[in-house]
Image (cartoon, rainbow, N blue to C red; front, side, top):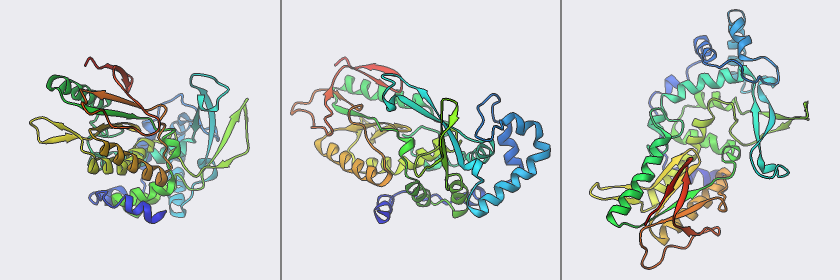
Length: 345
């Protein structure tokens, strides 16, 4: 499995510049800045100490917090209260007797959040150089509207010029919760992050546990071996990094939507796990299926074909490509990132 992951990641472009800045020792100033950016009135973790407590007594406890976190990074393990999250359930929609219609929310301790927020401030500065422009999630100066406008423009160009293409809107089941930690560490290494910075991130996921809050009480703790933690300031960026190798493979092997008179192609549009792939031929579908299968095996991701959609654009004289997972082409209305669209041709 490890060698298969390495092969899958072999064309990820390494990032080497600014590495020294990323893995420098944690500072008191970073923690204080992270604390000041925390909102008041948020639920606390298992120790019951909210951000307001740290803000009120920072002059007294700040250095001690720094010393504990530095020591934890050196040892590779946080204190138990930092490692243990409280899981509470919020309702989604549908039949509430089905577990999938409940959304778990992790309540993390403030000192854990301080470390993750400080590291997130470092990582934010380099995300734009790591992530391709067709992925907009948690990358500075990119917006979800970029994705919406891109799909709109592709539809408009196809309508005006009589072009054909297929859009597959992929739904990934519990995308953040399914990321394998070992896969994530190999992705960070493939990008060229120095071991020092990777170690700081790894300590946030070493020997972590969760306890489920039910009817006001806490159940016995259980170990967590995969998933990117909600409430962790790094979570969005870590997910964008984790899925980037998949997107990179798709860019390399799909034929894409060729932009007229521009000598350029668009292969996909991604906002976190909300992924739209451009399809032109049966070979594109076969390539997409093969790459997704590899990615699912290596990262524990899972495509939910029953919730995915396939939109057909333009006229396909010989018939459109066949689709996997029981997916069927359709025309007409669709919904993407909360925005409704409609095909009139």
